[in-house]
Length: 265
Image (cartoon, rainbow, N blue to C red; front, side, top):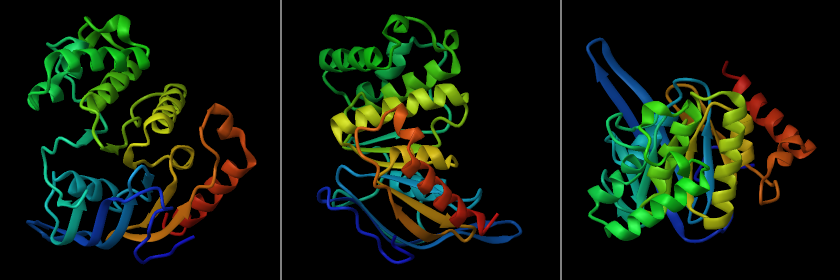
């Protein structure tokens, strides 16, 4: 395990995301709030890194800084060698709740990022159908999103994030609003896609078992101001399947990470 300082990935490839001495302080009417402090983290190309920690430790703030949605107060973030900024074509983002427009069909919602980027229409449509098929909701392509269950909406949202085939995927508690059984199925789907594509992924979650199941490394953060408490390598074999959740090794890792977080809750 690696504690505190800059943590390098397991040698999966060149650095995809480099976070260097990043801090964020919010100014409010009652004063200032230091959300995160001096975060150093490298996410290697093809690596899946999960962020966990108590509520308010700055996990989502850090992810939003990498996405270019929030400005950092100090530090640097490089995404494939260029400064982080919003609207990059090589970054896909999936937030806690599906960002789907109720007046558009499922297919039209999935296609939105490709249309914004002026991608080839025919190829994008083919890719969207491929993803919907992969998610098991191709039969609902022409339905409106309000006709879908919560789990189906999250599948559509994941397809939307992937339709432009981004090199980096940023996910902020994407499955927190669905039931446990749906969450497990979606986790298996994400693990399967990661095994097939090896996309560089930064994933925020409160669910320790989810983090262990999906990640190559789990970054445990301590409470505000958020700092890295420890980084836990996940040495579970890939591909990950539902049976992975039953391994003694999985339980051991979950227990270790829960112990680290439990010092602060």
